[in-house]
Image (tube, rainbow, N blue to C red):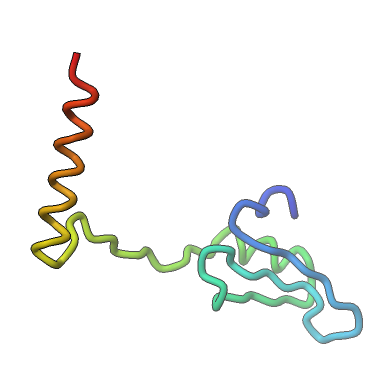
Length: 81
């Protein structure tokens, strides 16, 4: 189970607690799941999908957009045959 989920989750075991099996999402550290049994945690991690992040395609400021366009144009010139 640890190998199956290791790309997205950091898994821990804490002996002596009501929910000894815990998983913390690597990209969203505030997301933590806990379970009393390993099989339950495995099922939860398999079904859980964290919220998708919206990523802007262009910077919001005009100067930043212009700089990005200049960098892309320079890169295109380097790649041209």
